[in-house]
Length: 299
Image (cartoon, rainbow, N blue to C red; front, top):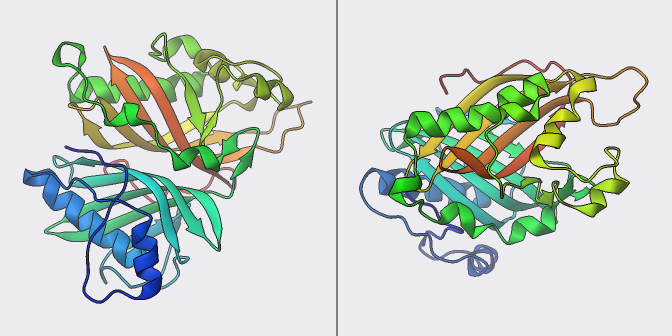
């Protein structure tokens, strides 16, 4: 399994507009073996996505947890930055970064399932939260190279260990008990590019606190969160990366007036070493509370 910050796939006689877009990105390391098959197909999908072409007639495509009919997906004008992760054992690829949509940089996450060199599932998160106390899309333009660094063998864990560490975060969130999550000493959390932990600016938010990863979780107790539809499409033991998609219901709390209640549809990118969460980035969009799951946990 390999990661890459940006992608490029050449094509014959591209239009001037497409050429300009491609000049903004650099070459992807496709790698070798099973990863190369997945990553080259994912790169082709992104090329088609940028050009507005239909990629595969038989695919199942969702945007922000809503299934789309062919041609309904909004045009992505440019990929401003991305990191790509793959899992040949599950035939899946995940992308995190920023896309330009309607002229505006936007937090972006993507999951692809690929079978027989065909994209059969597309799951996208295009977030409307670009700036604010809990979002800063500008910071997504320089993805953290930490996620692309291999973990030394003596500090790595197996696939089950990656899944368990990542899932400890969702379980802790569901119980509003930060002590249940396997946070490393140096862990920080980022939402739509914004650093949420150890950041004085969060004092000005509704949380009115300087958070640690654990205190972020403890502060959710009034909202009685429910973390459901937990899926782990990418588990990369070499990089110590786990990717998880999830729906988390945050309920209105008595006597607390907050605008961010609803179901948080999230893609989580976890860096894991020594069986602990070293860093966590989330791309998320708030959708109506209790939204129905459109993907199964086997996806």
